[in-house]
Image 1 (cartoon, one colour):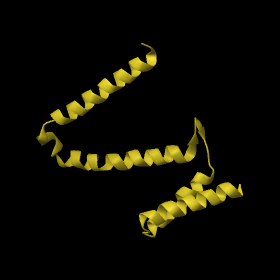
Image 2: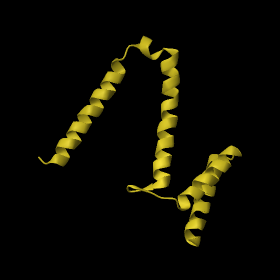
Image 3: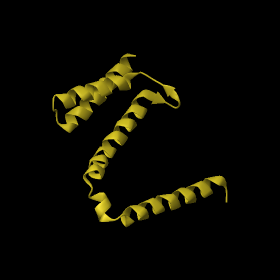
Image 4: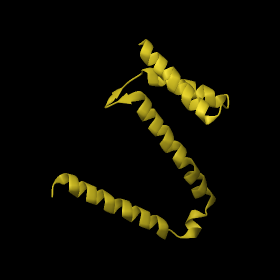
Length: 102
C-alpha cells in the first residue's frame, strides 16, 4: 500500500468522523442564535474564497486575465438583478471575447 492509498483512507476516516460528530452535537448547542448566524455565513465565505482562488490564481501565481472581466460582468449583472442564466451567459461571453481579443 503506497502513500496515496494511506492518505485516501485516512481522509475518508476523518470525513466520516467529522460527519458523525456533527450528528452527535446536542440540539441546544445548534439552536443558539449566535451559532445560527455563524452557520448562515459559512457558505458565503467558502464560495467567496473559491471564486477568488479560481478567478485570480493559476497554480501558485496571482493572475489577472479574462476571468476578471467575466467576474466583473457577472457582478454587474447581479447588481442589476438579472436572472441567473443571463448572469452566467454574460460572464462567459465577455470572458471569451476578451480571451479571443488578447
